[in-house]
Image 1 (spheres, rainbow over the protein chains, first blue to last red):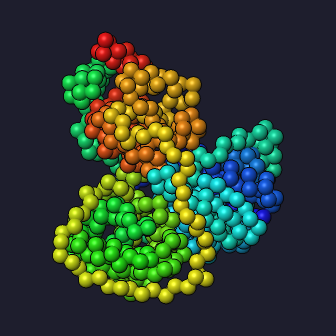
Image 2 (image 1 turned 90 degrees about the vertical axis):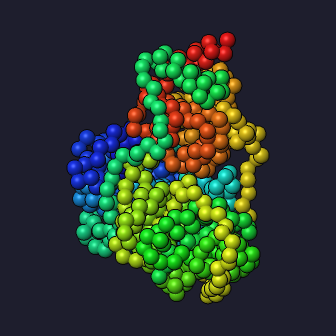
Image 3 (image 1 turned 180 degrees about the vertical axis):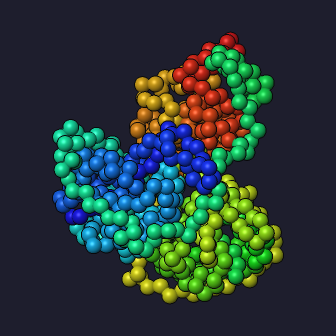
Length: 256
Length: 324
């Protein structure tokens, strides 16, 4: 089985985000980056699928040069090789344009499974996987909790809303977007890190892949959200703050 | 030319978010000077289509086909593709539900168009409409516009006040689609729920909810002490339950329980939209978080920017004093 897992590099979760001078994107100068957490779960599922079925796991990443450590991390955890679709710094693509580039990179590989995280922590469109499936003509299922391969088909458990679930059977080849948190993530071993250095990373420039290098979605203005409620921010040392809060709970919320 | 709102139903019951989207659709239709129309898809949906016609729309399209009885992305995409091709709406709006997330990107792609997903507001100016969506788990907002038509967008729960029925009745057009069972690749089974919940957070008056800020499982006693001092139920955001630190049944948010207590304490919770939709009905929200830009402060009545490991124990002590 050939399994492709698509991962994205995003600003680290605790990053202090500053809007840049154009007001259309972030000031990226002080940011540190990490693997998009939902994609880390897709990678874990891909590695476990390979352990079950044999074959190979190929990591696919669209991003600028700085994404290289994220790709190495995936290789260190056990992916066999990688494809890095390299694009310029500060380019922000919508899900359609992103999936267009990824589809062109994937097509010659003809994988049996494509896995992605269910969304990215930066843009959060939550669509790239579904669009990719449509562009490649693959069947798909989203927000997948469990994957049960059945020969030329796969039975998956999908999460619905309000605590509901559903099992769905799909034919291969298939694209699945994986829910976060369903399996424990593995750490890269020292051996894995060492091996990763010699694993193949094929770099393709986004321009080489042509179509989809720009997007129709325009981020007109990026800004800090305004507080919709009149919130009172309590200040002081912890003891003072606690006193004020208890006053509020007693006399305004009336729950003490 | 219209604003087409795709309503969602499952098993003959509406997803109420549909009527919030209808409200957004009307706002946009008024701004750009077109009519708002609604589409209902499913098998045996005549009664629902008639009900939708009472919501002040210009027309309802009923796509009634047995192959749409059970949701599948292939059938829903193909059916709506045919409707949109025939009617050529300017905007196509959806509620941002799990089902929409499963097929709307595919549908938009059929038209070579992007979908603006997870929209929290619509800004209209003259005949121009910008969508507002969140970036970075709600830490930033972006005004987004898209060149070309039709424009596809899905709207997050709570972005608009749901439309009420207005009496009267718009015409219902039966829209026949060409669908074949062989086009449907996925075979869905009946939806199910896992073991009955033993905790009903929905009934709780006071909830202390904990998020990533607690850092590790061993730190949970810090918030447990607060819940105990208040006589509150303990709840959590998704990552805490994913990690197995608290059982899934204590999760608040779009994939967990929806709560509306008198006071909701969000401790170390940043406030991603998936969490906010589960607790925004709370009467009073208290947020304790070290990041002053955490989106939870937007919905908080009282906010404390500080280290929960210092603030919470101090609060427990003061509550005990006040109750003594």
